Every structure is written in C-alpha cells, then in structure tokens.
Amino acid sequence: MPQQVRGVVARAKGAPVEVVPIVIPDPGPGEVVVAIAACGVCHTDLHYREGGINDEFPFLLGHEAAGVVESVGEGVDSVAVGDFVVLNWRAVCGQCRACKRGRPQYCFDTHNATQKMTLEDGTELTPALGIGAFADKTLVHAGQCTKVDPSADPAVVGLLGCGVMAGLGAAVNTGGVTRGDSVAVIGCGGVGDAAIMGARLAGADKIIAVDRDAKKLEWATDLGATHTVNGAETDPVEAIAELTGGFGADVVIDAVGRPETWKQAFYARDLAGTVVLVGVPTPDMTLEMPLIDFFSRGGSLKSSWYGDCLPERDFPMLVDLYQQGRLPLEKFVTERIALDQVEKAFETMHRGEVLRSVVVL
Ligand SMILES: NC(=O)c1ccc[n+]([C@@H]2O[C@H](COP(=O)([O-])OP(=O)(O)OC[C@H]3O[C@@H](n4cnc5c(N)ncnc54)[C@H](O)[C@@H]3O)[C@@H](O)[C@H]2O)c1
Ligand SMILES: [Zn+2]
Ligand SMILES: [Zn+2]
Image (cartoon, rainbow, N blue to C red; front, side, top):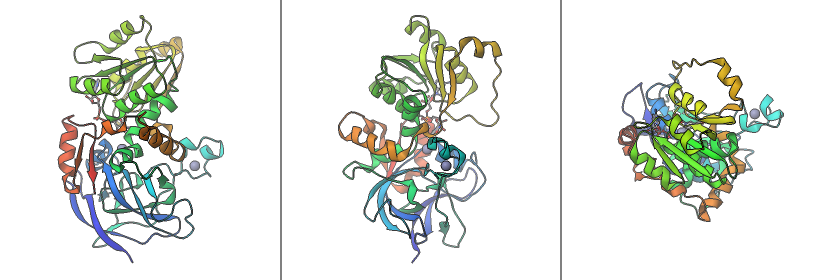
C-alpha cells in the first residue's frame, strides 16, 4: 500500500520550501523504501530550489542521509529490512562504457528508483540527486543504499552521502594526496574542510587552508590545516608560495568553483603538481589564460565528481575510521534541526554560519 509521509518540497523557483504530505509507493523490482533518520542540508538543495539545476519542479529536497531499510522490492538482495544505510547518488550500473573499462567511479548511467514519489494530488516529484531525503521516508534504488556500522550516529555518517565524501575524495581519490605532500585548499566550507580532513588522513605534511572568512579558517585548523591564509587580506598565490619554499603546493584544491579561485589554484601549484576542481561553477563562467602556462607548468588539471568515490568501497571504511576516532566527522555537524526548519537552514548556510545543519527525524 502506498503510504503518506511528510516531505520538504520546493514547488517553484525561489519560493520558500514547504513541509507537505507526499506519497511513497511500495518498492518495485530493485527498489527500497528507507525510513530516514537524518539528512544534512547541502548547497545543492538550495541550487535546486533556485532553479539552478533544472526546471523539473516540484523537487523533493535532501540527499545527505542515513536511515533504516523499511521494505524491499522484488529481486533486492544487497540490503534487507532493518539494515542501517547511508544513501548515495552513485549506484553504478556495471554496463556503461566507464564501468566496462573498470572505472565505475565515473559511471555515466547510475541507477535511481524507477517509480515516482508524488504529492497528494498525484503530481510527480523530482527527488534531489535521485534521493529526496528531507522526508520521513524515501524511495530509492537498492544500489543507492550502502550498509554501514549501525552503531554510528546517523546525523554524522549521513554526511558522507554528499559533501563530505566529495571533499575528502577530491583530496584522496582525485588529487591522490599521499604522505609528505603539500596541499592547499581554497574555500573552507563543508567540502573544503572535508578535503583538509582527507589530506590529513592521507599523511600530507603541509595543509594550507584559504578562505575569506576568519571563522572558516578556525574550523579548517580544527580539521587539520597546518597553515591558514585569509584571501580577503593576502594574495593566496603569494602566501602559498611563501609557505612552500617559493615553489607552490603539490596539490591545490578549488572548493569554491569560480574562475578567480581556479586561477589561484593553478598558479599556487608546484611544477608538475595537481589542480583539483571540486567546487561547481555556474554555466556563465569562463576562463582566459595563456596556453603556454598550461604547457610550461606541466602536471594535471582534474575535476572531481563526488570525490571519485565508490560508496560500497568508501562509506563503510570511512564510518569505521570515524568510529575508531581517526576521522572527526562529527565536527561537520554544526546544528541539528527539525524537518520544518530547512528554509531557515538555507539562510544560515547563506550567511556562512554553519558547516552543516542536519535535519534529524
Ligand atoms: N564536485 C562535487 O561532487 C560536489 C559535491 C558537493 C558540493 N560541491 C560543491 O562544492 C562547493 C563548496 O560547497 P560547500 O558546501 O563547502 O559550500 P560553502 O558555501 O559551505 O563553502 C564555500 C566556502 O568558500 C569560501 N569562499 C567563497 N569565495 C571565496 C574566495 N574567492 N576565496 C576563498 N574562499 C572563498 C566561503 O567563505 C566558504 O567558506 C560548492 O560549489 C558545491 O556546489 C561539489
Ligand atoms: Zn556505469
Ligand atoms: Zn550535496
């Protein structure tokens, strides 16, 4: 029987989000209904509400979540009723050209639920990133559910479902940060700070945090930055050069995603080093630079989608490290809020006052 629960819906571009009744179908073949325990508020949810992703309103927002499997559809054997799972937006298909070449982290045809969740009147909802977890329950593909240690705090480990994984993976997977590297991270929000935490986990020697907000730099230090640069007061390229013997950092991560921050990342990098773009630019942004600079400096220029993660490989391992006290994931949870406070959390996020507000159900 389809069930009615509460969900946070964005009905129209820029309109405040509302908590409304939504209808969850019984899981069909390959699908799972998950009772949500917690879901973080990510910048991407706000992008959806502002019409910055696409026009497929109404959206069911929320996508950084953990919960418990409530029911499974036909043919689902990867998870069972009662399993504690973190939801992901990379349920790899195993069939596309990326998967077939052994690069499933780039999968070009990831799975989502086939059936639609709806409003009471039958209007189909578009779940954010194929998840839609600011709700009591949601319907996803079984591959979007990754089992992790059930004793972990859902408000904390749910954050692995998007921003924290994206940042940590940008450093460790995409950037290949390893022992002894010097690393600089431009933009120290949830994503940048997760990159800092990842660089520290991987054994980076020098970790330079760049932000324009002094409070963010304090949090970055708490998560492992060894040096900080306030970009509002100092030129980040010069400051990073000074901190690295005049050479630049081995890996520089742009966690803002603007032409000026990407250029800073490029010029703050040592010869043959790596630039990682994990911040998401808007379609109107362009870049003009001397081509000879790309050639003469060598190295690699990469983008990081979801931290090049494989949820089945990375989530359980990161949850175990957190449980062992080796990964301070709990520091990303700035506040815990109720389902009807998502709109307020967007304002708090916009003012830069939090790393993450997390809805607890
Ligand atoms: N690639 C992916 O898979 C992926 C996944 C999730 C989020 N993201 C993107 O990552 C980016 C960061 O997300 P977030 O949640 O950390 O956002 P956030 O708003 O919390 O953090 C951005 C930080 O950048 C700082 N900043 C802004 N302009 C700056 C500048 N010119 N110089 C230095 N610092 C500056 C801000 O003060 C803030 O601390 C966003 O673009 C988001 O869409 C990417
Ligand atoms: Zn694939
Ligand atoms: Zn997100």
